Image (cartoon, rainbow, N blue to C red):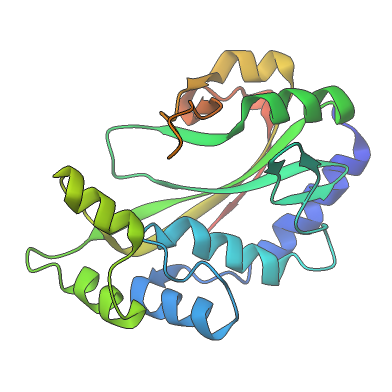
Length: 220
């Protein structure tokens, strides 16, 4: 049975999540992060960073942010267990969420019994053929990023930029070793700039998350 303190924490988080906006416009979200002092407003994948920004403002006083650190990995938050904030686009063919460093998750489950994930799900809209959103973002950043420069030099294709997210639900998930085995797999990230392989992360198939791990859902 789930620890009552964890259930109480989830109840408080669920209540606090109810005042989150349903429609996330990419331009407005990036400007809100920029004006709010977030260091992540330049990121191409703004959606996940905006959810972190919303959680930091809505969950303040309920959970400690950032959370516990294991070697080079710091979880997004901590209260009773380690928590991460994640987003997922429902209108895609894949239903996997890359979570966090495998070793860190294994260690935090060993320390506290569970690993928590607060997962926002919704439908996304993408950039138009003229890439007007990307051009707007590049102008706001006063130039393209080093990541983008490296992509161009490699000759790799540019990803389609998400321009809007319509929030439909937020899931509060607590995974232990047993339930993580049922829905998780290893995700290998490739190599760092120094050529060394990056440590693997856990990839969670949200369609395989057991009901016992889903503590609460807030619908919008």
